[in-house]
Image (tube, rainbow, N blue to C red; front, side, top):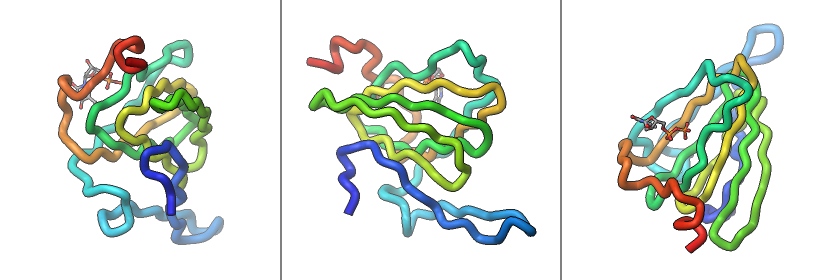
Length: 132
Ligand code: TYD
């Protein structure tokens, strides 16, 4: 059983084969939370680092449906990890209270599956506040 207070990779099933191509599916029955919102980011310049925040309540699954995303995470215990997302069927579960930063290849398309609506009040944008 995965520890949902820790960031970790989730592998989605691949339907199909190399001759036909693949379908992967995310549905509430098999996700760690009920989906409220899906958004995506793209055309991020390679010299830009996005993220740089944590969330009080938001939980997300990040996917690189194209290209490659490098995600660094830090949880409240101080444990830091680096994840490379470069497979369309592998997502990263991002728990609440997890500082994260992302860097993208020029062709990367990131899909975020989230458990709640966008709320600026849910962000912790100061690292010092997160560490306290
Ligand atoms: P942010 O979540 O900081 O992006 P990232 O984690 O990819 O660096 O959001 C960037 C800006 O976009 C910020 O001003 C908030 C705004 N925003 C919305 O207006 N709606 C949304 O759904 C999201 C996720 C962000």
